Image (cartoon, rainbow over all chains, first blue to last red; front, top):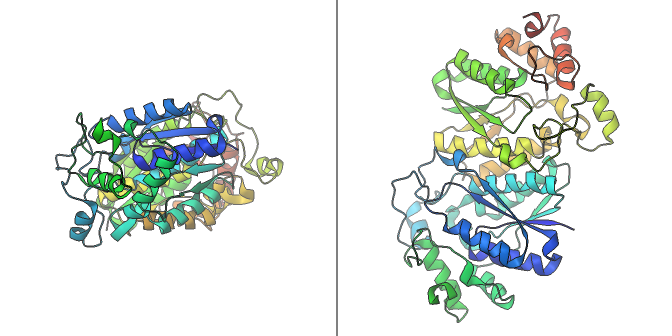
Length: 227
Length: 227
């Protein structure tokens, strides 16, 4: 069986890719990376290195056209500052609404694109690395279990039963994801999570804070920070 | 309230656009047209003329990158012939599977793109012109009521309740759609449905056959054929 893995170059999707290569073999895994007009290309570069490391076919898609009407702070054309606080702090302030780093229906578009390409490539399952931390407090509504369930049904129905979604981490914390990845010797030094595109991770944006915490809770230092 | 209408330049979506302009006023309607790598640009040209006719904002999106791995006969890079037979005949031969003119998860991608742009543009509802004829026999599984229901839930959940889908024709036949459009004086001479991109509609592809029949059942001749 062939599967497709959505890869962003970050910790979660790289761990997911490692699991799938271990389970299905590299020739049965297609990696798909989607650019949505981020302020930098570090994530894409990381996803290319990781696909090469695992020897899997890698497809790159640029969907930035779709997001050019959004004022999300992650986007290249936005003048808004990327918040320097943890997700938990952002969620506290957001009053149950999506946070300023919510890219409109991004995961919906990633999964719809993945469904189309999976059908064309003969892949039966789309794997992606959404986990429970991201869905907390409705900060990223397109990471929730209810979204995943509905999107999976839409993809099953709309493909005539050819494809379905699996989000193996949907009830895991980021700490659990890193624990699994450490067991699989994931090359985390090749990954990139920071919202800023500098030489080294900034250490103060939401994703840097959560990433470091996930490594610390596993009793190790993030290899990217050690580099 | 602002709404977004998916427009292809064909009969169904143009009728849907006419209904929305009548209901909400032209300044509250955004039209979105998506190219997916068709063999010709006649549909897009038609959708531009129609948006201009109704005086609504028109957004054009090119998603052909996503579909370049598909061998669907409608796509520019495919050498396959577009079938010269009605949908009913194609469905009879397809044995419950999608027909050769099924573009992988196309409507899923259209709706996911529409959801993202609707959020950015402050539109609360996405309207699109799927109708019951297209869903018959699972020929186009991404036109079915069960797909629409699931996709609507995915979009509601994934947008944090900001957007939902309405498919007003989902239980109508194409004959019913044309009946409604004739009441609204839709300029059908500006629309384009034929899968081929010639000067005049070919008259023998599935969409030409169904279109002419829908006009004939309403006792009128298709104004595009009269032109």
